[in-house]
Length: 190
Image (cartoon, rainbow, N blue to C red; front, side):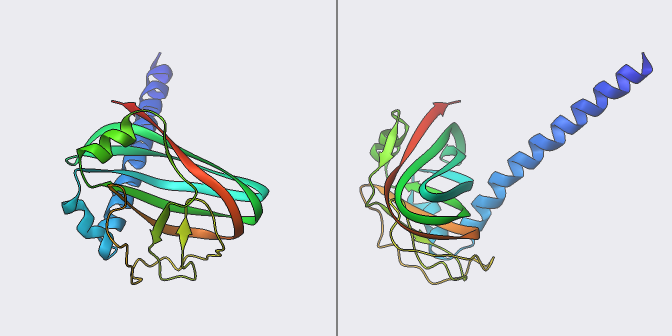
């Protein structure tokens, strides 16, 4: 009986620690974007944002990317979101990055959370890294990147586009690509 109690308590403690570590992943990503120069100002300019702490991307000819995130309004979590991307074209390698999407107004946020939102292949993101990765783009394009682990690169986002501004921080990897594709997002309210 005592061993069962110890096992149950250990299981609950491990579950609690893993939940806290998972929550820290979101806080860490949000803090990185707050401290990364230009993206930090968007927290004050926006009604909300969607943050994806880690998106994994890879491919050899046909590729894809996936990541899970949370959607915030007024600093409070209002739901979860999954990002999926399929690409076709010349590509080789893999990379991981964090992404944040800022919503300028209620209409942009409502558009994102209305169901299955999709960015077209020409939507672009501002890459924030001091490493070799100079551009990030939801549809691909010619790019290669290695993260330097610092978030102090000069960026210029040109403001909101269709009520949204997208920033990425490279976490690591190397990816060569000239692809066509777009990002699709789901939303599940809490």
